[in-house]
Length: 240
Image 1 (cartoon, helix red, strand yellow):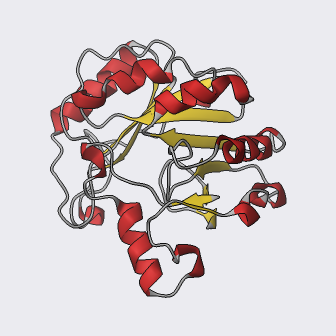
Image 2 (image 1 turned 45 degrees about the vertical axis):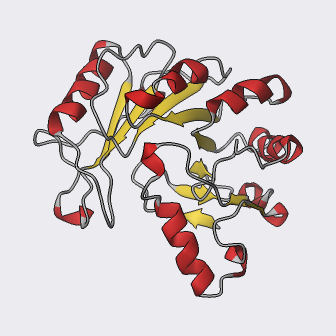
């Protein structure tokens, strides 16, 4: 529920909430849903409700015990701005993030409209990075919504990338993560889709991180693009 992570662009995960529901094409083969069902079958008490939204009040303060600075992915098994999560609970999560400035928190949502609605009740301290998922042009409007969130760092997760994203306006966006889908039923990603986003990031001076090619067995394909890896972070562009 909280601890070190193998996700390439973060160092730890923190899940004060588990569970979600599908809202767009990128959710079709949700890894978190698969994992939740597996953990439920194994009798893990955190997943008694399988993938239904569940609040874990006892985990709200967990990052306060981590002295060493970490990049922390918030709610890798849910979405902090899910409509079933009370605004008061979200405020408590933000309070913990505000009180632990040694960490950088990566909050990724497919519901940026709710983040905008709640933004006047939340304190976006500089250690809170706000991101949204943009898997294809159908959800391109999420980018403009994210720009309305008063975070110092804003990022896009184009994973799983399901189609081309050309002519992106990355003004006020500081980081873009791109990755192919992995696991059972993984849908293919074309190299030119990735190159286009990489080149747009370079032109618009946005940090670019290429996570993986994906596939049913993602380890077979690695994460090199044109014979190199891309591991850029927003703090390489922004002065903290």
